[in-house]
Length: 362
Image (cartoon, rainbow, N blue to C red; front, side, top):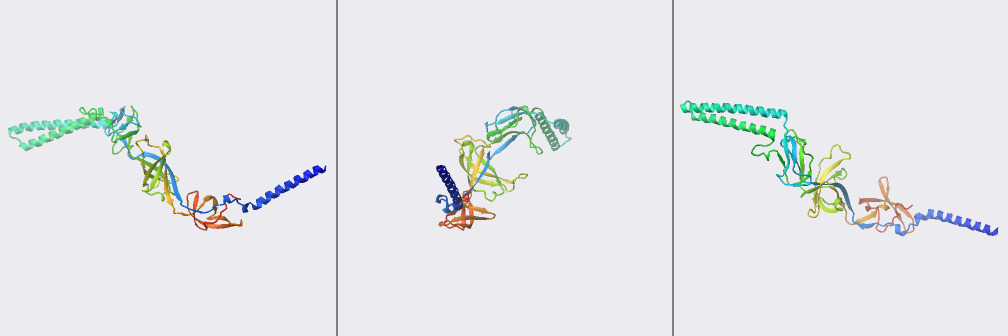
């Protein structure tokens, strides 16, 4: 019995000892921060960088359109093909509007009648000139009118033939062909054989037959928020990371920042472009690749800095907790400067020898 009572007494004493240690630890932990956790301000350089996502695009991208309406009879190229100026893209079978066709026929009939009248007038005046009833100059004028009428008639014939057949007799292999107007790579072919297309004119943009891009000159295109617009200026160097090629690093330079935000878009965004120094000889380039641009927007000289984990934020003020040699704690307001997200410049309120309590230490 005595032995059991002694065991119970020992257990109770141990329990109270543990509880006492916990209470003592709770009351004194702020004063016994391990030295390794205490922060110290250091001299360092702060570099602030912005990362912006965008796309790789061709600096020269043109749309090939047709000068005649009709149906795609045949396509000669495919997406990814290399073309030069004059390379055949497609052949078009004309399908003119009924009104346009009727006007062309009426114009031909009118010019044929005018030519016949002018021809008869010229033949009649030849007979008068032989008899001396008309001067030579009048005869030449009549001849000129006949020749002009003949040219107008031939032009009307060509126009009608183009509408009906898409080519002229002597140039039948060229007039209904759509050819590339630039050197480059075919990056899009939005039409198919048998599809109807419209011609380009002053009132209609016309159907796009193909898109051709010059892959020897690439650009980075991205967007800036309204908070970044004053940080990015033309001429600034940047580093580009292309994910499709294992985050290949390329150099570039900001070329243009749009003076106006894109309308109807929230949040507000501004377009910007940058040049790309891309190693074309070793890699297969494709437009539309996702690219991340990294730009240095601010930099300090060697200044007094402090890691973010020692800064306390309260309303509009920033403060630190100084740990004295005696273990006493002192709250002190500081004036922060530039920050890179890891460390912050401290303009006022700290000395190089100060020791600081981390924010997460309770």
